[in-house]
Image (tube, rainbow, N blue to C red; front, side, top):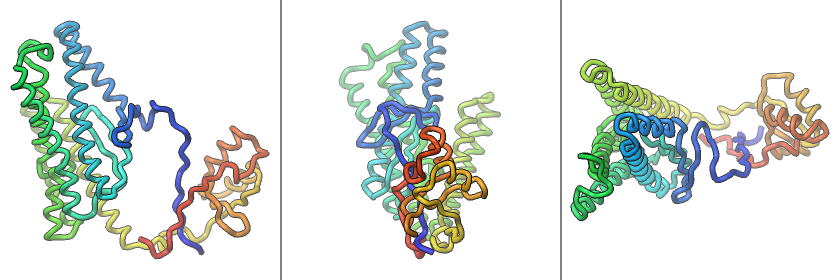
Length: 331
């Protein structure tokens, strides 16, 4: 059989603002999509409502301004990670704001320990740079002014919050940035999987401590409990991904590929192709013409095409053509 085939999904034309997995894309920075999860918008609304109830419109406006400014700083933090990773050839898919922080979605992590360490440290460094800039502004214009509300000047709170973000992220445990720095250091003395396991264990141990503190020492602080759950699950997910990747790197595409499968003719009508495709358990079908693979079509593609176009259209008109072929010896 020929080379193993990886199916690339088609992408339709997009509007400027769109929903992707519950997130609203609000723009791009350096070509990287920036998204806001809908739950983050609910958080802003909740904080504004709480401020209104406790201090009226001025408090509501101040509270919402603070949370938006804070998460703008979080975007800069994640953007620093993303730009350093991209400089090492890593494709950055998006930056998403969540109620508990920001997430930079990357295709993979930099493989060299030094590169991963620099990528990880870039975020906290950006947060500290923001804090330093705010410190200079504060001492240049003073604490009072239009950016203050009562005894809590906005710039002062933003400065210290950025310091705390940097400090928290530098904790040497996954999934924080410090965990990646720790793994990068350990990877110089042991294999990648073992270094990851140590950082994961520290991360999950830290999560347990934070969760217990939130429950028993701080009268059931729900935010600390949620952060603990996020850390525990994030650390576990990182460990599983690394172990899975280590196994897959020892398996070639030729060993993993399906060798017996049904194909569809490019010129077959959608109605005939769908009737044929639903007879078995196969979901993805190579499309052939003169014994050559010219595309791939899924069962869902056939259903959608039949519904939107009609039975007279052919498989070739709904198939995916951007098919990447991988040699059998590739891992």
